[in-house]
Structure formats: structure tokens, C-alpha cells
Length: 206
Image (tube, rainbow, N blue to C red):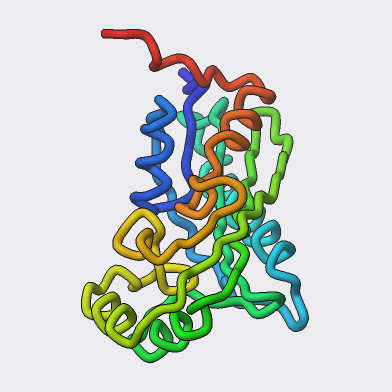
């Protein structure tokens, strides 16, 4: 029997899973997609977030489209990009990269873009890009050194996760907080509900 109203999350991010749980949604399957996330020449960060979320969603769709058990499922993909102006800060893998990113973010504003892509059971593709403006306080050398020592920067776009220690660096935020964490809940729920997914299925007690 086909699985109806099941959600495949084309991501392995614990933060995105936690956010969906917060909204009362349990993904039926996690499918992190290994795609090339390098920006194209002169690509705007907003366009990059939109393109990568679509590529992840389409890759997940291609991986399950021949599997009868997953017919009737929704596929949700997301990609988060951090940028200062048009300068895109990649996911930090090495301490030197993280240090450079934190020095760049210190005392200034940056924008976090998250592209979300939903592929419906009837193969319709819906997209939305959400942006949030974040301003960091001026970081001291000790702020940066201690944050680097924490290791919380690893694998994070812009070398920080707002839901962790770096939340104390945020002086001002305009827009969606959950967008900065990695999945804008309001827009995601709106997209799902608008395409017939029962977002309230798990809300009842018991």
C-alpha cells in the first residue's frame, strides 16, 4: 500500500528534524542528498539557496520514484546560506575558515537565506526563499577563541549555530528565528498545508 501523507526530509540535519518535531511533524524518512553545493560564478546567495534546495528535493525524488512503498509521499528539502552582502560564507570545515568567518561577522549585519522546496505526490514542485537579517555584537578575541574551542562551528553555514553558544553573539534579528536555525517553520507549514499535507495529524493528545 502506498504511504499517504508521509514526509520524506531530504536532509540529515538534526536541527531540521527537531524543528519539524516542534511543529508536530515526524518525517517518515531522512534522505540527506550529496550534491555539489559550490555557488556558481556571480551567483546571488538567495539564488543559491533556491537552487540547492530544489536540487536536493529533485535528487531525493529521483531516488524513490521507482519505489512503490514511497508513492504518495511528500518530499521536503532545504538549504541555508549565510552571506555578508553578496559574499557567501561556506560551511566551516576547518578552524581557520571558522575564524575568518567569525571575524567577518563581528560587529556587522549579515543575511541568512533558507530555500525550501516541496515536491508533492502529484510531482508538483513548490519553492520559497526566506531571509532573516542578523547583527552580531563586536566579538572580542576571547569570544572567538572560546567559540572555536567549543567546536559548535563545525559544518555550520557562516561558522555558527544560533541555537547554541553563538546565540549570545546576536545583537539584533529581523525576521524568522527558525529560518536561521535551518528551517523557517511558518513558511514550511504554510507550504505543506497549502499542498494538502495534514500538518495537524500528530497534534491530538495520546
